[in-house]
Length: 187
Image (cartoon, rainbow, N blue to C red):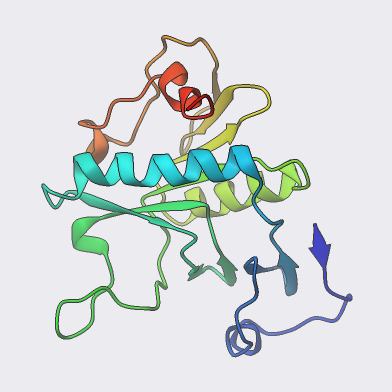
């Protein structure tokens, strides 16, 4: 993980900086650059967002976005996948999707990378839950497990292949097992 020097910066100053590749996040007054996604991370992210969208988007229930900057609660984070209920997606006057999302996602999904701090990722998920996110997933390709975070409930670990992964109520039509998720790594 790449960190900038220990200089504190305001959120508005951070948001005025040019975007970086990979994305940088603003957490506790510091800029932290996300690691460059590697193969497993990229494979899951590339398959999961369209899989969610194929079920939820046509019915205008929700939409999944990859690498979308979400700024709220004095943080600016970029979850691997952010899912927003249809009526909460920020829009322009013409009805198009807005560029700025100043609200938490309804469902946040992170995929572990070898060079990424699990604590930082967990803190981002907990931050989302604190501000109204309904569920968070932390997918660990190496362990072939998914940690599922709920507001005001214990975190649960899903690793049995046939187990159906829990989803927020609005996404109940989206069904995916642990085996189905990790099978994308074998394609």
